[in-house]
Amino acid sequence: MNSGWQRATRWLHPGLRVKRWFLLILIGIAVAAMGAVLMLNLFAYELTIYSGGPLAATAIGSIAILIGLALVALAMRQVVRSVATALLPDEDQLVDVMLTRRRRAMGPAVVTIGGGTGLSQLLRGLKTRTSNLTAIATISDDGGSSGRLTRDLPGLGLPPGDIRNCLVALADEEPLMTQLLQYRFNGASTELGGHSLGNLLIAALTDITGDFERAVQETSRVLAIRGRVLPPTLQKVELCARTTGGTELRGETTISMTTESIDYIFLDPPAPPAVPEVLEAIAEARVIIIGPGSTYTSVTPNLLVAGVADALANTPALRIFVCNVMTQPGETDSFKASDHVAAIEKHVDSPVFEYVIVNTQRPDREILQRYHAAGAIFVEPDVATIARMGYIPVEGEFLSDDDWARHNPDRLSDAIIRLVAQETKIGL
Image (cartoon, rainbow, N blue to C red; front, side):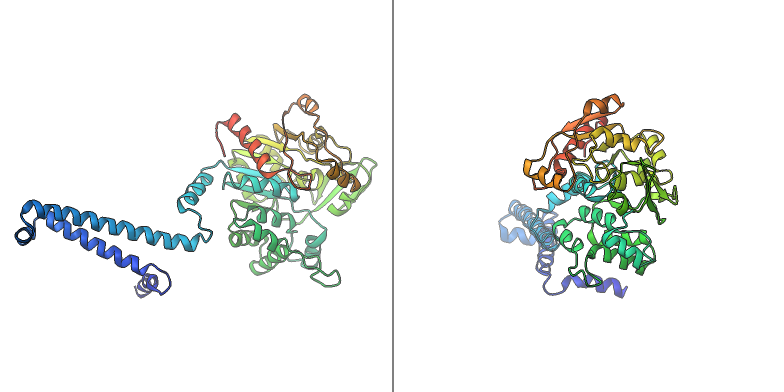
């Protein structure tokens, strides 16, 4: 009882700027009550003598009720404004925020599967359309900060890099969160050198909670993300590849640096158990988007987790594959759009998507030259070949306006929205 009273009286704490409006509410209620009393003639006799007759008393009562209700309405408006100012420091309109959140909450369930910067770009566009987002991010990264952490901290279990990128992309206050969680410590000679602050946060939460999945959930709460991010499996796996020349490669970093053509990839141990929430999300989804991302090291590994490919093959959801804009040096050299599709086909028993979104817009010459120097080329949109393979190509100009050859989040999301609206009669 005392604790409840203490919580209630906290509203009277100095500086909240609501006490005056609570007082005004009481005054308004009192004035309205007085007016109601007049209307009920409880004090009509006395008031009639001084006000000039019953008609005047009725008028005074009506006016008093209106004034009282107006005072209550004004005070309530100011209380809401005081609370909204605390919650919305950027002076956003509360009604606009409420309507936007309601629209997102009513959006269809969307599942995205991939990893790397490609998936992050897609999520930045989708999060403005729906809050019912589930991002399934690969956990095979063994290089950079993620690789060092998994080697130095055996209890971490899974590399956090791709998970972190998705969390940042879905964060409500993304610009600041991006700078904070993507921050990398300088100094190669120090133990922190090269580490991402976001990776360290997830590693610390894993150590505190004793559970990688729980750590991701807690990080999601800290960032107030729209949607959720899941690893496809909680079992530690190593990504392996077999080249067309018969060489076996182990580890994502080794695979991405190869100069030989990749024949297929596999996980060691094979077919690790899927996180139950992943299979549930796929079963309940209205829209499933595979990619963009490195075909062999970001997208396909998710499909090799036990049950994931079968769930994708049997879901009634609208299934879309987003092809990359540029090839991945060492992995998909000289690949056209249809080659990316064929590479995924080779790793599944049944088709896991129906539509293929292909970018037809070539980057500027200067950008292409920079990518060529790094060993990447533009992915040719051979949509006719894709159609002959039994898929439905969706063409468009989806390039970002910055100095990178990557998807523009809004243009890509708009294309997906149009496709969803056209095929399912629902929108994001």
